[in-house]
Structures are given as structure tokens and as C-alpha cells.
Length: 615
Image (cartoon, rainbow, N blue to C red; front, side, top):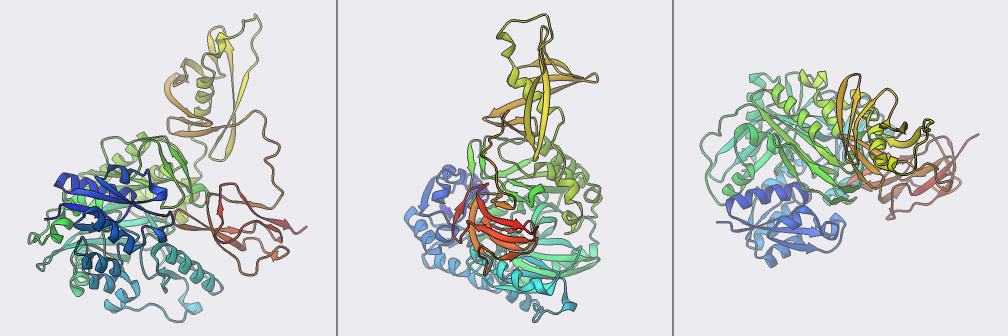
């Protein structure tokens, strides 16, 4: 019997495993880096062990350090979570060699399937060799790991070399393995997967299907179970292929077999030898706890002959600290307040007051809704996201709500090209509620009318400036004998926390919360702007500023001051939150200054380079 379990991971998945452990009476051990010293997963565990350093390579990717932590803490089992070392056979062996229970498949099964190239060979497939024009488009893909890291779509042969280099660099950073391969890229397919669970007694369950087609940067955003619109024949085929893959490697534990579905044909992608981020939708539909089942299987218990019966539909949305309107740029800062309606399940590694840093994935949480039908589950999830209190950095919350309500999604006609087609409409969604800036100004003005005397002439309008979604907004109001007044709007009530406005006979409440210059009015995020801009905050034309805090991972070969560059030419790459971000030349010209070097840590807004435009 497992009594003390260490999770070799962080954040949301560590907290989720700990929840099951507490319900099962199992003590918990967390590991944390210096960047995670105050992280939620380190605070909620019974015991926590420090991994000195901040970079993943020095902490969560150091197998020896984690095994040492498990032994020192008295743990008798290790759960790998997902990402990091979760699909590393050498890590699994090190855990077993230390006399600990490994909550996962045998190392041999990991080796057979964790490399996507070997998995394809096992399924009778092979990656592309030499790529020709007729093979395009192709997908460059990391052989290890997942989560969309180390993946690049290539549509022109001249871009292949740079894509291979970029994918290798990102894969090595994320998984400690820079191997990549090339395969055909299927346009507008659906990403469908099958959850499997196998015991040591020969039983393999296929726990339905999941659709994970809504993706950005090849990383899933919205997932659901069962995958809608599949024929019974195709569903049976997917289940059979998934079970076949598991039996081919004597699989044990939880895993996922992924496919790209085009029409009524399934193309095998890979097998993930671990728990998936989207596993809660399967848990909701089948009424099981997959982590509890993983632990039971590791203890030697047998599964029932058949899995539980599926009931209803479940949808999950991943809430990220990122700005979809700025190429999904990750965001950092303090998560001041985070509260989700009880109608949905919340899996998160953050709570009020936590800092969102640059070292790890920007996912804040997963919200999961379950209902008897797909339409009801989608409606429930969209409504819960709207009512979520989220005070902190910019997130993808509005994008998620609009995606769930998009006709293409509600009618189940989506595919992996969904955001390629609709991102402009979904992400560039304006500045939020048009009356939010006025409510912020009235809340700020509350009580000021007490100072000074009233005159018989009307007071001059007061002006406030705010920024929302990159746009500057100006609002006007005035103090009168009757109180605060704004043109076209009746001010029913105004204090520092609540403003009630009546517009065209309709009364609306605005809850206002301020954190310095950061203001949240219901679901709208504003930044208060100074009356007089700082004249020193100016940069020369062609200045390239860091869009986020991060690390300069590399500079384009041969790039020096005086180099001629073309518009859109990649100049350097930043890594933030485990993703690479390309910085390109804004116009044709000459590199006039270069302030970035590989390994350099930069803050948001830091000057990286200057391109002097060609006159």
C-alpha cells in the first residue's frame, strides 16, 4: 500500500494529484524550484523539498535530484504528472532502482512510445525522409514530450532549415531531448484521442474519445468528451487502434493515443505514456478518478472487466495568462483575485495573491463543465467563464467565451485550423464593456465633491484616461449639486467599490476593484493613464522592445550592427513560459543597434535592437 507519494512536477497537476491523495489517506510530497518557493503546490503538500535553481534543466528535469528528494522525504512512490520527466524511461528506471513505486507504465513501454518516431514504426508508419516540394506542407515535430513544444508548420522548403533548428532548441529546453522529425501536415483535420487505462492483469480499457481540435501553437485550448459527430464505426476503430497500441508494448496505467481525423479516416499521431492535461473531461463522463485508478493499478489491483458506462458530455477550457491579440504573448504579474462559480470543476495551481512568473507554462487553470448534453455543457462552461472573477494579468478568458459560442464550435464543425480562420474576430474583441471606463472614473471620483465650495456656475467636466486592450480611452464626468453626472447616463450610485448606472432605462451594476494603476470593472481590465505622459518614455523609430519578460535564447547567425535586414526577418528569439517567441525586423533597413545576447534576462519593454528603416 502506498502511504507517502511524491509528485515530480509542479503547479496545477501537482495540486490535482495531491487532492486525490488526501481523499485516499496518502501523505504528499512536493518538489519546488527557487522560482516556485511560494507556489501553491509547495504550500498544500504535507512535505516539500527544494530543488536548487530556477531553470527547468536544473530542477524539474534533473532526475537524480528528484529521486534524491523522494528518498530524503520518506516517499514510497513517485507520480510524474505530465510534461518534464513524465515520459522519460531513464527517470522511471531511477525511481524503480531506488526501491520506489512508479505511478506509470513500465520503462520499456515509455521507450517504445515516448519517442514519436519509434511509436510510428511500431504502428507500421514512418516519418518523412528527404522533404521535397510535393511533400508540403509538413510538420516538424519533437520526438519527445508534448504540449505543442518543438512543433513547426513548414509551407516553403526554404523555411525548413530554420524550423528544424528552432524546434530542436525548444524541444531540448522543454524535454532535455532535441530530436525532431518531419511528417506530412494534414490541413483542417480534427485532433481526436482515446484515453486508455491498463492493469498488470491483462485488462485494457478504452475510455471513450476526446476532441482537442481548438489549439493555438499546436497546444490545446478547449477539449471535450465524447468527440462529437464521429460515426459508430470510426469510434470503434479508434478504440481498437488505441487498445492495439497499448497491448503492443504491454502498457500499464493511464495513457492517451492521439489521432488526426480527416473525413472518416483516422491517422495515428502518437501515444502519450502519461496522464493528459484534458483528463478531467473523461473523468466527468465516466464518473471515475483517473489518478486514483493509476495508484490502484500501481499497487497491483485489477481493473473490472469493462469500464464504467459513459454519461453525458464534458467540456474543458484552459485559462492562460496570455494575450491572444499579441501573438499569444505570455503575461506576468500578480493574480490578485481568482474565484470561479461552483457550477464547474476548477483545477489550478494558483490562488489569490500568487505571482505569475516567466519560467513555466502560462496556464493558470482548467475549468470543466459536465451536463447531460453537449449544448448544455458548452453553455454552462461559457457562463462560468463570464462570471469568473479574474483580477490580474491579461488572460485568454474572453477568447474562450467567444470560442465556445462561435457557430462553428456549437455546431461541432471545428478543426485544427479554427484559430487560423477566426483569431482576428475572436481575439481582437475591442476594449470590453463601453461603460467600464466611466464606472472606473466615477469610483475614483467618489467623495471628492466634499472638498471645496459649490458655485452657481456649472463645474467644468473632469477627464480621465485609461488603456484597455492596447487602446486609449477618454471619459468625462462632472460634479453637480446632485452628485456625479455623466452625459447620456444617469448615475444612480457611486462609491469606491460599486457604481450603478442607468442607460436608456436599464440599470447596471459595476463592481470596481483597483490595484494601483490596474483597475478591474466587472470583467473589463483597465490601466489608469497619467494626465501628462512621461517625455522620457520615447524610443527611436525601429526600436524593438521585449514584448514580455524572458531569456534571449539565440540571435540570428551573423547578425551585427550594420547588417542589412528585410521586413519580417527573424533577428532573435526570446523564451518565456517554456515557449519561444520570434522577434522580427519591423521594416527593411539596417541594424543600427543590438542590445541582446544569448542567455540575457530581459524585462518587458527592454530595448533589444534598433532597425534603421531604409529611406
